[in-house]
Amino acid sequence: MAPPSRDERRPLLAWIALGTVYFAWGGTYLAIRVMVRHEPPLLMAGVRYLMAAVLPYPLSARGGNGGRAHAPAGRPGLRAWAATGVVGVLLLFGGNGGVTYAETRLPSGLAAVLVATVPLWMVVFSRVLGDERISWPAGLGLVVGLAGVAILAGHGQGSAHLADTLVVLAAAASWGFGSVLGHHLDLPANALRAAAMQMLVGGAVLAAVGAAAGEAGRVHFSAPASTWLALAYLVVPGSILAFTAYTYALARLPVSTVSTYAYVNPVVAIVAGVVILSEHLTWTEGLGAAVVVGSLVLTLHGARAARHEGALEPAGAAAPGTDERPEPPPS
Image 1 (cartoon, one colour):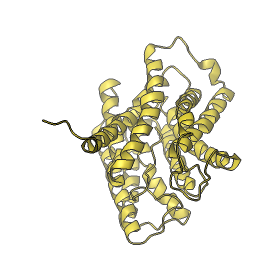
Image 2 (cartoon, one colour; image 1 turned 90 degrees about the horizontal axis):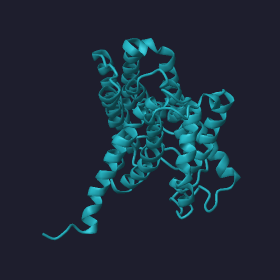
Image 3 (cartoon, one colour; image 1 turned 180 degrees about the vertical axis):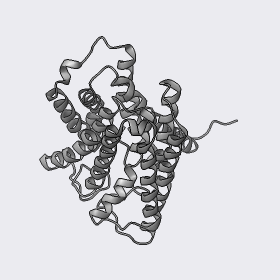
């Protein structure tokens, strides 16, 4: 039997890449939880992104114009760095920094489900900035999502860690706002370069704030090997590999298919937390998680419906669930 041709292998490789995104990003919540058991959250989150940007940024110099005509081409200038810096701070400091800080006390599975509200926040901020109206399926998704969050926050571990739950919701809102705002700014056209610049700026701010808060004195170089393995996971599979796989899958599969990571990541995180860290999941929390994931289905379907009905799109990219690039999660 003849071996498959190169064209025949591409769909399989694209699905493998999407599977990598499912598990690599889903596992980051577990890795964060393991890392912050012994190391300070903000400083180590900054180290993670600074290390993750070392390889992608030089490689991004080889990329071309990513198709965004309004974005500056060639070597990024001060304006591009400023725009990327704003987005990087919102995504990585406000988004990932908040999640990492909250996971010092909050179970990883619960954090992942709360982070899954990012598409809901994006729909809200898209409406606030006048990019698109909220269709009735998306509006229903928002209501259902709020109900799911209320169930999670009012029962079990969510009620015991209400302040941390609110921190994660604020982090998800910061990520959603940064994602929508980024569509209005002159970011570099090359997606790899834009991501690397965001990681450089966001990582630097995380590290600086962590150091200013006295976290440098709380770094334990004698921490268990699992701590450093978790950091290595966050840098390589959780950042570099997952983003590369995400970009590959996005170029070869429908965006509606790739956006399913928003449903799968929290499920992977919950299972990993229960199996590996023995995190307890009550039936009420399971119900809340199912309601939140269900709200994502309604919201992303509503975003697609709004686009097909002629709703306005964000400048340069579309909202979650449309035929443009979906945003990665703050994991």
